[in-house]
Figure: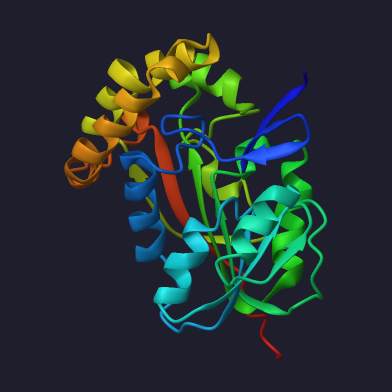
Length: 254
């Protein structure tokens, strides 16, 4: 049986199933909740049309709708598209390197934990710049610092982690407007003491047998941990992730 892990979960025997708590992207855990909190803090002030690129199960799209945006989801996985559409979000099939949208059509583009999987990063940056309106924003989150690469990154299919040096130029021709480096100290400890071990055990099939225990831990600890992660010291070299807003410059007519 072929098992394909990806942004939307795993595909077993042709059927898409949601990921467990503690999977590579950790949709339902405190890390994910904290990351969504940071993404929404960097959203454009004026809500409007936007795209949630690689929307997964639609958790970010739901938050954007609640904030007054009109999100369109995009994903390569049909199971993810179906799940997001079931939440009232229109979804298209597409990839970051070839966005299925007209040029200068979008005021905002969101990308949560996706660009670390993209092989041709310059193409994805160029596509984001193409589809954004002048003054439009790309709001993204990615894992940070190659020094923290572990078996979790390999299991999740991360091609890279993003180092502080040169980060501002990574998505040229867009201009970095703001970046929040996060994870020190509590999220770094969470990853080191729990997440890496959980992913290893899950890959070996041990965690699946303890699913009830993990669900109980999630119910008890997710909210307190998500709040604890907000006690963040933005030490770039010790951050495990970065949320950033890049802007497409408005060209002078003169």
